[in-house]
Length: 259
Image (cartoon, rainbow, N blue to C red; front, side):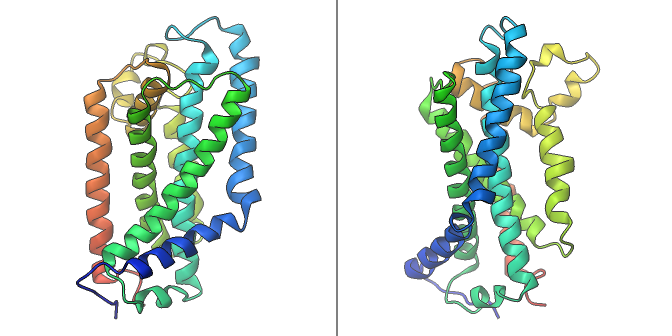
């Protein structure tokens, strides 16, 4: 049975966060270097090779325009990968039972996994930002809006990763990344403005939450945006609340955890 406590167990929570964070620190080539190399390739190919043939887009250099999308894509993938793989493999080898019998609440369990996802996303994002400095594309006009989007989106996809980690098949860990995160990022204005898309696709794209994640980050970095910022804030905040409540409910009933 899952342990419940009336008071916050700070030691237990910190222990869980530290253990989960050490998971990605111990394999830096896979968890950190790989997205950094991927970002370098994106920046070089789309920022310099393609960007050299494009004067400006949205009133800014093409490299400055695409960088927020590259940054957000890698933060999303890192946060999602951290929680989904961690929870799945802990369930697979029955290591999850150590967490279930620990004197921490459902909320503390979720916070532990999510904070580790945020940390991995932030470390990946920081590395990409440093790479951007080397390429002369590190803009930051609104730091608090920037922090809101990268932290909030990390929370959202850490929660999504937990949901996927509760599935049984190993292949599900990559299905969402391959058929969800990557295409939705590409169709969310990562490399182009909304006006550049075919007219029949524009209304559909406005229902893509990735469009608002990238657009909000782009505004924070270069001051340019296409969608109402209030709508982007609302979608991000509501996503956190809804996903957080749903994950808490699944932990509470022991879905895929008590088997």
